[in-house]
Image (cartoon, rainbow, N blue to C red; front, side, top):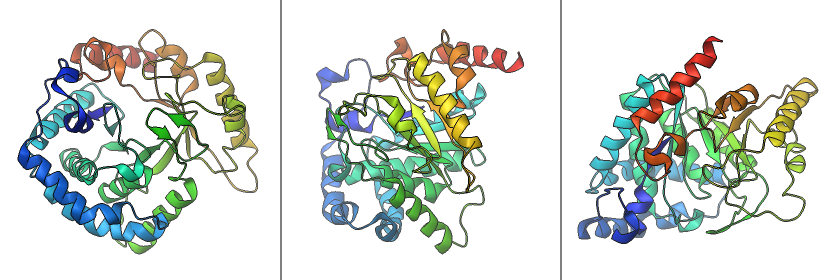
Length: 333
């Protein structure tokens, strides 16, 4: 995980920043935040179908990326991101996922334009620095469509979607299920058809959270079975299983059952060919790595690799080295 603490910079007081050593937004930064809101807020919050409005969004993303470079704290975020990316790749990480980090989160139609601008700029810098590498992106919270635009623009291989299936209740509000798969897939197809110079590495896949962590679901949806029954019906390309909160391991029985369901559906998906990746999205540590790897196609690791094992801290190279050493040993067995 490449965590970008832009939310913390914009929302947290000095008391809540602890030992994160983050810069503080200046008066000029806040003037730029306001200016971006005035110029682009209406376009970003348009209720029109994503496959229509993405053309509007794409036209302004280049402008947003250039304006984002004027924020005083962007060089800090860029340096930290590229330093951590270099460490991950030096220890042979397969892919990196860019994500804005911290809490509280802004939600979908209340997302400051500044966050989208900064995330798009950093994605561009990441691709320029590591041209042939695999990348994904998630924009919290509930901003799957905005993340997909960034992924399409910069040749990322996947996005992580919080709101493609059933709605739940999170601390920041009800998950809107408006980054739904129909709009995301349509936006992607529209991009491909209208972009003769589309990235040859292929279009980004949409990996969907099942029973998103930190979320309460109504009766029925608190059981994983109903989610798995809809994987083929919704043509989900990747299913992400998490624990109940950040850093909490997944339930072993649920992981086993999800693996069985995906394998079963993959072999009986006629009349069309269907297969999906199974990803673990929280709680993977060295101690449970062998178990998780046995069932999952990929794992998303954040907290276990951070200083003191805390998700808001920066990457700890010693923790990363030990984790990747354990991963490498399993690959050779």
